[in-house]
Length: 139
Image 1 (cartoon, helix red, strand yellow):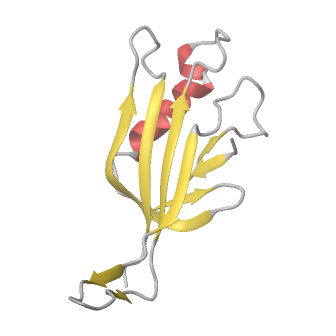
Image 2 (tube, one colour):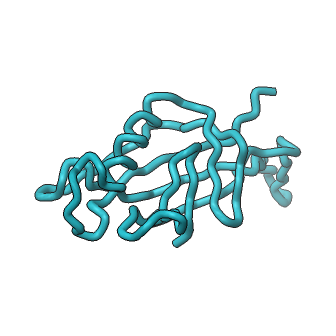
């Protein structure tokens, strides 16, 4: 996948030595166009766009790892540091800057319920994060 930056947290940073935490497992970018459909009896249904501008959305699934099994002290491992940074990040809605090589949004709010999922038998900071963002537009 690709390098992704969420504020000052960089995943799969090519400037960092290996082993390093990998890039995202999955990234989705989308716009939600608001189109209303009207059912018209006996005629072709009608549609209407109810907004000329829409907001950019992003969902990132990313994994904090033990960086390839290389044994370093827990507090110095890239995976542990990313875990702690994301743990702090999810406490606030933001706004945050979210960026990949081809997509960028200067300010996005963390939306909904950010999640961290662990699997039995792995280190406490090893797991999968699901983070959903929406473009900031306060009017």
